[in-house]
Image 1 (spheres, rainbow, N blue to C red):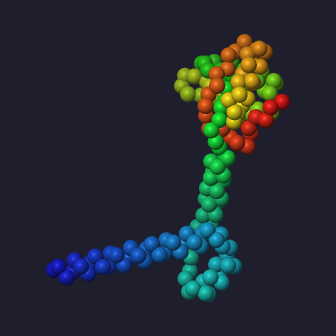
Image 2: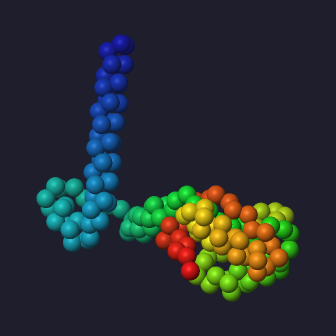
Image 3: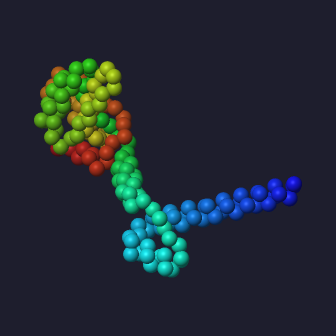
Length: 159
């Protein structure tokens, strides 16, 4: 009986090794982004046939795109321009902000029951403060500097 348990453990280990080997081979083949012609030559070379869903390339491209977006973000500041329950007020402040700073992005979010309007992507606190002071003088709002992850491709460069 003890002999069967040892043999069973060896079989499980061997199956695990084979499974991992197949997994790493599959990952390597997907990473190479092989087309059908290359897969045929690979089949002839290794004697293995790879069966995979053609949509796997879409998933891999989507993952690369998401990864690129994550790498383009960093710490910085945004201005909280409006926080309240009235959507129309948020849109009004968004319009005013875009008229003054057309090159800066605005971000409107809704978290029940409030709308929050944020503006700009600032790397430096000084830049955010300058824009905040300028908006205070033009509009009857008092923007608040909020530390946040920002899109580094849209960082404010000054006027």
